[in-house]
Length: 573
Image (cartoon, rainbow, N blue to C red):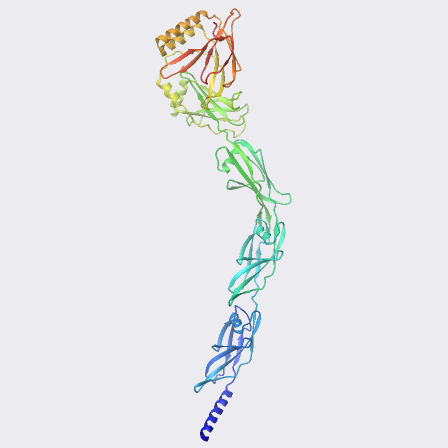
């Protein structure tokens, strides 16, 4: 029994001596100062004479032991987690190792304590480009973070308002947005700094602030746009004046119209045609225009705010064509002019798409019932048919130019179809002799359909024999019975007609449907009783007739008949 106790004692003494013989390890840390995202290498250096089973690292603040390899790399975040500490901090670490002794492990003494300083995150670097802008310009804010960290988010802080805005680390803002962030509304220097966050364990760790950067924002006032005159025609001109503040040195003015921007001087004169082309329009329209200007700010041009919108009304100068014709008569073409005209205005008449006009004439001195100027062309039916056959088309159009004004030729009117006239005149052979007459005044008046037609009040001097010819022609067209009656009437009137024809005057020569005209059939002084015989011509598909209208006293006031061709003769009775 005593022998066994001696054996146990000897064995315990042997192990105790062996444990006391294990040398402590040497702990090195590299680098000794890191951030949470950087790494540190822990090296628990054991004696080369022992066969180490395992190394252990012990953090003094956390009191935790981690089983790791003897050469171990850890991040600042992992060290913070082991030590249960927060930034910034100093983590103290020791290590020991174990060796296999029989059936168990023998632990070495602890190494000396080593310290690892875990600093807070490095501050970012903030750059602003450009540092001087206007409200409409943009500036790029770049919160440059360390390449070694995985950034969760960047934040920008304005010192004047002490507000934080969450953006991407590379952010572009306008001067207006910066002024809003800084709670400013005029020229100002906005001071900005930034920071970032990284994920540390279950939370986010905030970096220090960057240095402060300044952005100077110049406030450009909007220009004032004036247009004069605001209402023009295609050939008129309008002056656009983009009035800029006197306090700025303007580089250029820009005019915005219908989605397009044109670079002009700030005082610009344009024609209505040019404005229509710029606005991509081709008819009467209201063109809305606004402008802005640029100034040199540093190395770049800064844009001002837009002016208020101004409107320019452009009236079309396209004339309107009207045609009047009675079978067998000349064809009267009326070209009505919209807008302004001067005494030197000249009109051109075209057949088909010919580039050269058939006739050119000066504007009439009178106005239509719509207060429009007009020109009139008279073309014989034979000449008309000949010219239409030449161009192989059946329409007429007109345009006009404002005298000596350059580039004043108007657009051509819409084509007026002459098909009805051509077919009617071509299908019937004239059987009546023509007779001369003196053309009188033309009355332009609206018809019941709204179109413009013309009525003639024409004083004519006829020899007595002409009456017989006229009514004989009617006999051929309308039948024997009616012709005999009319012929008898003509002879009767011939006998009663003096050798000296009367003189017929009309006053006024221009009227509308509701106005009155006075017809004065002035007879020789030897006659004591006179009256006016009105002969109204009309056409039908099969014959042409003339009807006698009631007699009137020599000087009478009558209302006009429906708008069509009226030939008036004064006859002594």
